[in-house]
Each structure stands twice: as structure tokens, then as C-alpha cells.
Length: 264
Image (tube, rainbow, N blue to C red; front, side):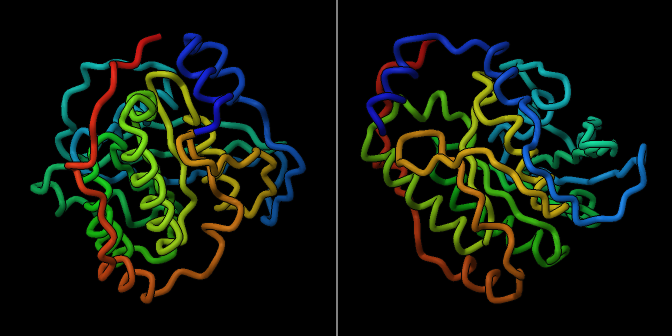
């Protein structure tokens, strides 16, 4: 991790208001490659999938309502929220589908996958096994909808930053490998501290509509990764599903050692 970011993350409290204002900066140099009339409204469905308690509901509610609550109950089935954003003269309505991560809800995966323009695959940065589970989530979701843009999101960065540096490096590099195989933008976020929350959906919108996005990438291990420029643009085919299914890349949970708890 860069010394500058480590100092910044540990020595000052994150301001939700300031972070939100930063992330709400508009697109720059947009290049809409779709034919939209003025005042048009376009609805975009995005699915959120991943293991239980990785933070799918927290991310959705934070983005739509700007609220974070540590006491969310587990999603039973599918949660659904909408948010409207404006891009030039067009209103984009995000329809977000949050699928419960328990295995008994896997039969409801088509609700979050079919018709989605993008699917966000979430894993908990503090639990290595949730990244390994992305293989199966991707295989099944890709089988239902192979045209949706995949986005790989690591959650709970505010807790991850205080874990053992060796674990941080291993987890970061492994998630980069997964992102490459999936052809998916990779973003580390924290809903509790408003880190990269807005940017996830800006990247999704840019990839869906082939917009030019000038948000600076972050690719230094230990920092909240934001890698998107060369990912999510290539044609996705069955080879990617086969590659990730057969991948033997794993992070061992035993390599994780928690340091003092993160405080504001």
C-alpha cells in the first residue's frame, strides 16, 4: 500500500458527506453511442449476486438511499430498488436486483440475471472463501446471460485495510486474476465509509453505453483498487466460463491475520 493512502486511511476519519460529494462528480467527455431523444428515459437492470453477508443489500441501499446500517438482515429471495440518474438529456433508471446469497435461493438467480445489462459479483475482502465462490456464481449467471457485463466488487475495504499486509497482497492479486479471466472491471469498496460506491455504477453505466469515463484508476496493491479501462469491453464467450471454472487460484483463509480494528 502506498504510504500516502495508508496515512490518509489511518490518521483521519472518513466523512460520508465529503466522500459522497467526491463520488458524485459527473462523467467527463461522454460519448453516447446510442440514439436517444431529449428527455428520454432508459431503464437499466443490474443484478447483484454473491455469497450471503458479503454486503449486497448494503451496497444497493447505500447507492439508492445513501444510508448504511450494520444491522441488515439476510435477504430472503430478491430485493429490488430503483434510482434515477441523469446523463446529459437522458434519464437512466437503474433497477437493482439483490439476490439472497443462501444456496436455497439459487433457483431465483434468473430473476437477477435474465434481462440484466450488467451483473455485479460481490465478495467480502475479509473472507477469502467468498472470492472462491465467485467461480460458481459467474458460471451460473454467465450461463443464463452471457451478454451482461460482469463487474467484480470486493466489499468491506475499511476492514480489509487493517488486515495482515501479506493477506492484503494475496487477496488483491488473486482478485486481479479473477477479473482478468472474467473480463470484469475490478473495484474495492466500502459502504460504511463511502469508498468507490458511486464509482461502481458509473463504471457500469460507462460499459453498458460505451461512454468515455475519466475516473482515475487505482491499481496499487493495498489501495482500494479501481481497474476498469481495459476490462469489460472484450467479447465474452464460453471460454471465459471454462477458464474460471477450472481456475485453481485460491486465497487461503489461514493466511489472514487481523490487525487492530479500523476506527474512524
